[in-house]
Length: 357
Ligand code: PBG
Image (cartoon, rainbow, N blue to C red; front, side, top):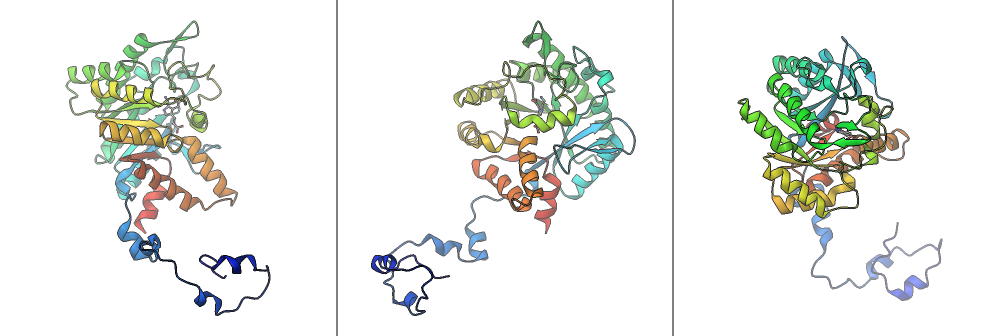
């Protein structure tokens, strides 16, 4: 192909498509008088690596896993190709894989048997529930991988909401009392990071106080500080089985996608209440929030590349519409560029394997 950039205008206008061009033409052009040519830093792989500003590493990854009852079971999740629900023994295998790949932390989400779901989500407080049993099993076999657990009632309620529902209203303070107990059973089971994802007001402070009163000073809190009422959680709700049961939407507690300043107020409150780390969710459509939060608070800041984002990239790749491996790495690098310290992503093991090469 001929490089047309920099050719005199006259010649360009006179160009007839399909006309054979003289090979000498390229050398006849007058070079532009450019003191700066940014392409110099991009001309080779070594130069690009040398000037690269942000890079993704395995240390940036948190790997979410779905747990279910049973033994030696793995069931695919249709809307998340490549992701499966796993029985506890299989989750332990994946935790070992995380350790081998040097992924620092995994996140556990339960698929609760429908017979155990009820109006109040009381199974969340059972010290022997699926998540607690999984934590204990993993800690026994793979003690050096961090474990993060969601605190919210949605995998346990018959209505699929994160909080207690009365007359169509999600109760705030009554829900916080439940969440505190949920956090405590998880901490007692050995969870390292408590991650309240419910968006009730005051829950971070209440959880911190309760953890400390029980001597769990070393259990961290990663607050889902700015969590939006998003359509991108769809596949996750398939995975934990709340998609079909969810009545209405979560807009009275999760944030309005139109808001930015409100995200800063949410984050400020969670920090005041004792959060060690904060999270923005979803990820890619909310990179502006990640950037503003990081710049404003300089806290350890995480982004959640949610199920819908995973599904979009994976579905397009399966159709041959984009290069899945490259899209995966590019999307995760974007989080680093925006200022995130780490990312919760279903791609975690694939990325870690890719980065190892
Ligand atoms: C539950 C919770 C959700 C996600 C994480 N924790 C769903 C929701 O709020 O409805 C979404 C994660 C994902 O989509 O990957 N509170």
